[in-house]
Amino acid sequence: MRDAPDRTRDASLESLAEELEVLHEQNERLTERVETLENDLDRATDRIETLEDETDTLRIENDRLQSRVDELGAETEATSAAVDAAHRRSGANKERLEELQARELEKGAHLLETNVDSHGIDVDGNMLEKIRKDDDRLYYRLPDSEDPLHRSSVSLAHGDLLPIQQLARMDEEMLRSTTNALPSRLAAKLWKVRTDPTAGDDPWQSGCKDVREYVKASDLKHWIRRQEPGTSDSYAKKLVSRTIDALLDLSKNRLAIRRKRERKNGLEYTERRVLLTTDAEIPGETGLFDRTPETADVHG
Image 1 (tube, rainbow, N blue to C red):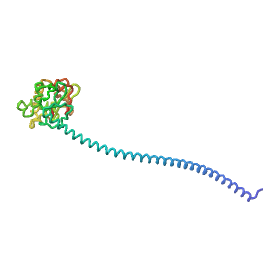
Image 2: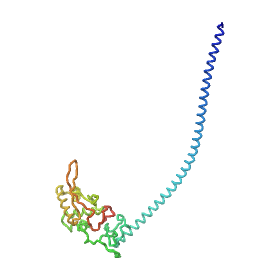
Image 3: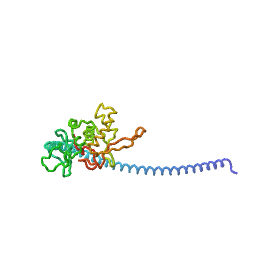
Image 4: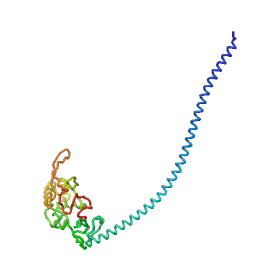
């Protein structure tokens, strides 16, 4: 039978053995952790080196691009200066050309419409007339001036124009001396603002499909009151009808009247419209009528 000291020693050895086993296991785990960390560190180091290489490459590329930007900036400044100089020369040349054209027009010349900036020309009376000649081309001239070269004749004489067109060419004084009827004068003014964008207050609207342009009776009433200050609303309504009648008569019924249902503030009503249709034969106007300064018959 073993004595107590032997049993105590055996217990201590077993305890030490167990502790040693635990330490071995901890050591293995730590070793594995160290290896993992070392691998992570190696990968991190490789990544840092890669990023440093990429950064160096980007710095070099950035320096190259900055140099190119500086070069382009210098080229742009030089180009801008050249463009500005060209604009100044072009502006000066345009002014010289317009001055020469104005002088030729005042001498009676007929200049091709495509070669003339009608709004840049400064001529006596500040009026240009667009005409179509027998070569079927458009020209600018001073109103009613004959071509001194007699190269071609004007396809539309004054007598070829509709009465409304003849009246629309007159100034206020001549118009009053020609007709005492206010509706006729209003009709002439209404026609003029349709064809001359510089004539001022224009109630006409662009149409679609088979309608070139139209004006509503309600808009016409407000336009009349603006043309004739002090006109009462009730009298303006009467003038609308009389002006429409004058338009039809003076245009030789080239215009049409249609009624269209309108809705305003939840209420429906029928309103008259004065229409210029696409098939209306208006002397000097062919095809669809483009209401821009370049297609006006008279410019002021």
